[in-house]
Length: 356
Image (tube, rainbow, N blue to C red; front, side, top):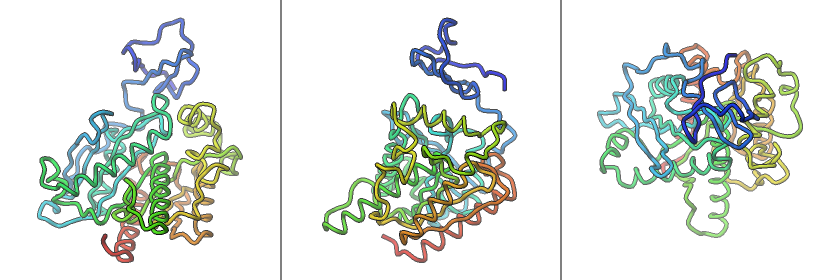
């Protein structure tokens, strides 16, 4: 793949010729030997301008949810919701190995447009800080920060731009969804909320910032998990494919705390230092795996272990689909099937759980 033009995060200039590139992700992200991070000014080739930037039945707008960190959210609502029909809220975190991606990328935007239209939901596509400039758990902390922002909107729905969101959003039916690395964020938010809920129940004390009452469930779309020990699907992944094992290893090197291994709790839900998921009061979880996804075995193992613990988990596998197929081709038939699956999961959770 040809190198993409890069801009220095520090100076806006091309890298000095004397510097050595020590990490390179297809030219979109390069790290120099002095720690300088260079990011491409262009969107990746898999974000073509042919993706639709609008939908006839969906309205959307942007807002800043964390001014200090310059974090934005793209908000989508079906046009019919403007009449006062309250809809469930799908908080969505994009993928990209914690190092790449944006809620503004064309493929993410196109997927969220279709998700809002066909799921009949308000979709909030939230950005978060990227590594290596901001290593984990920064992205998870930003996810928790977004949920705090959302609670603020629900508490003061008539204030300014909040009215556009509050007019359509049912804050009692919130779901956290995420693609790849975004699915990992969803996992960590579920665990944080679940452990807080279990502790609150045990001690009879008020809950913490991440509110486990309004979040009804979590959707992990091909979550980006890791581990020192290779799975079969990882070991058998062809080296020539775009999303290969070497690339994912580079993502972990750049996003985990310095010197951490892939068994770090941020990467491996079942690592030696990871929280005890058995002790967490986890809300319903939908895990989506792809038969052609290198991450397939980890997603399946994750769902099976949760089920063995008695947690409310559903596993759905798209046998012939690769990692992130719904953003690689947001208009595909398989993407439509996925959105239907998410819609059914949301409805089932709303029937099973009373509004808080």
